[in-house]
Amino acid sequence: MRVFTPNEVTVHATNKYLAILVAAKYSRVLNDFPRDRAKSGEKKLTTRSLEDLSGGDIEYRVVPRRRSAE
Image (cartoon, rainbow, N blue to C red; front, side):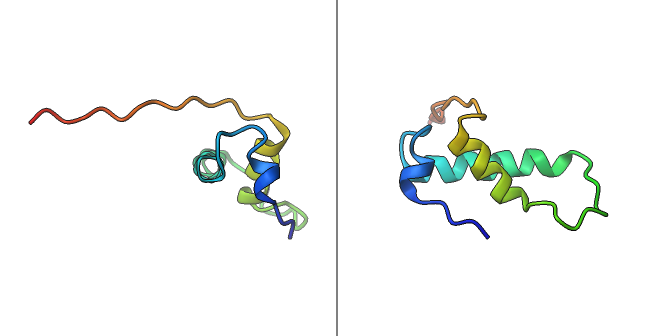
């Protein structure tokens, strides 16, 4: 299992918390795509998403949360 340092994931994200949130959401997107389950050497989706994020392959934008009208 590969270990990602905070410096690796924050190269393409503002901070490490945002990087983890982006990687987790990307993992959920990857989970929706069909995969070949017969491949035993396939990486975990979280590892793959963190590699893509640290490599700069994921584009994302932060959408501010709308406040509810009271």
